[in-house]
Length: 232
Image 1 (cartoon, one colour):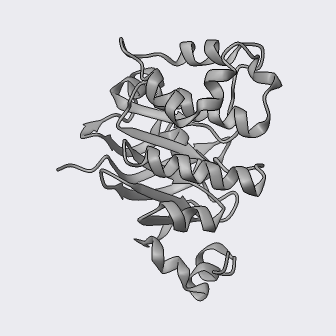
Image 2 (spheres, helix red, strand yellow; image 1 turned 135 degrees about the horizontal axis):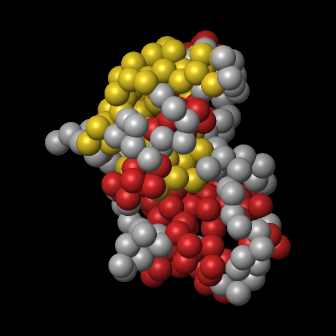
């Protein structure tokens, strides 16, 4: 079986800055692979390059298909959902309208979405801009799940959320990972330990470590690659 994602020698230069400097990684099908690293090392840029949002060179194979140079909408329709770092909900539209805009398939998975996020069913007529940060994150993830895509790119989902909401989010993502392969960018190591089977660590635009997620239980390893202690 092919990997969900194969990336080889990925380079991105923006405004004269060489941000990604030969990133190579694999994401096996199933479960969660976490893309880790200190702030500013190129994690979000990597996701954006995979989606064709920023120009890149190298090789990107998604679900067995070479996609480098494709427009973003075509990559998405291949089967890729994206949860951006800052949620990017349409504040002036209702929850229902946000979800309808995300529909890409003849039979969107509303039952599945509302099973994961029952609160959204009760707020379908509420404008997204009036939701709490946690509720907006629900909308952002729900949009990515609506079409049943086999690969999800999820960028910093716990950012700015209260600890209770982070725990609830992790529970939802555990269930999501039984349905789709997830490439997760996340700074919260407790969330990574709970969800991920594999980790890829970036530093200065390059992959410096690939391995099992439980390796980060070692505080020396966590400090070496992430600049944080291993304890949550």
